[in-house]
Amino acid sequence: FGKGYFDTYYGNSSLKAVARQVATDQSFYDIVDGDSLPLIPSGYYVLAKAAGSTENQYACVIVAVGYSEKKKIYFEARVYCFNNKYRKGLEIVKSFTFGK
Image 1: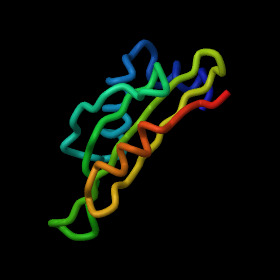
Image 2 (image 1 turned 90 degrees about the horizontal axis):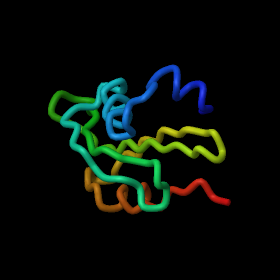
Image 3 (image 1 turned 135 degrees about the vertical axis):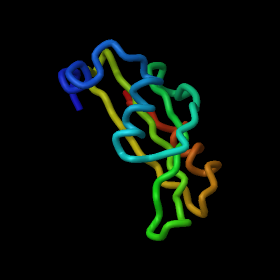
Image 4 (image 1 turned 180 degrees about the vertical axis):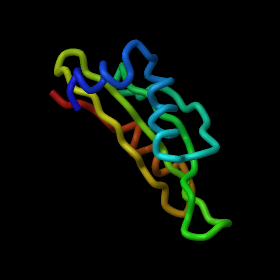
């Protein structure tokens, strides 16, 4: 997304608040603060759960957001974790970069 999208929907919110809002907007629950993204200075992720196909099922999901002032782009990503284990999902999220 472009800077206009980010400004319109999130204004002066912190990336932590934006990540939580994106997770909430997707109806995820049990949202827990994560951390900044190591390769994207203006990036952040949260951990959450998504409803499964039956009442007692859920899927672990990581919601990441980031912004590049230089490139004027904003991204949102949702990584659904295999076997409901965050470890591999976190490896993926922590590898995100805007490239050169």
